[in-house]
Structures are given as structure tokens and as C-alpha cells.
Image (cartoon, rainbow, N blue to C red):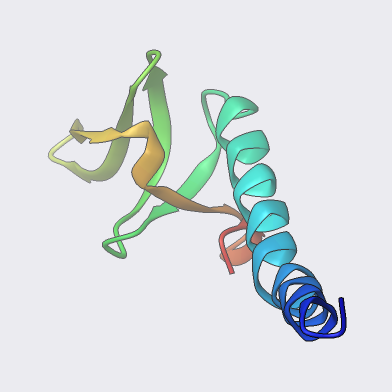
Length: 95
């Protein structure tokens, strides 16, 4: 029994220091992705800033520029949206 106590203690420490915070971060990111709407300003994991122009189950269409009155749009995977931004300030997403 005395040899199991240190193992249980180490597992408990790892759980509260590593596993639980990561689970919270993943849940927060999934919540942010599920609440995306047209018009939201976002930043992708690759650093591309854009405005959500369209949404699908797994794809987000981002308007990233305007050239001669035409929108430049790209499609990115919904999971690759890292941050939600308002007024140029990152407010929600993966830390």
C-alpha cells in the first residue's frame, strides 16, 4: 500500500497541473468555434486575419481583403480558427 501512495499522488498532480487545464482549453475553443457567426472577425492559426463570410459544418469562408470592389475570400478549416477578435483586439480562443 505504501508503494501505491506516491504513484497516486503523482497521477493526481499531473491531472491537476496538465490534463485538466488542457481539457478546459479545448472545451473553450470548441465552444468558440460552435458560436461563430457571419460578420465575426477571426484570426487563424496561421495568422490570417479575416471576417467570417460563410459557415459550413467544417469550413469557414473568410473575407480577407477587398480589391477593386471585389472581396478576396478563402476557405479554411473551422478547427483552424484560433481567435475571435473585436476591434483589433483578441478576445477569445486558444491561448
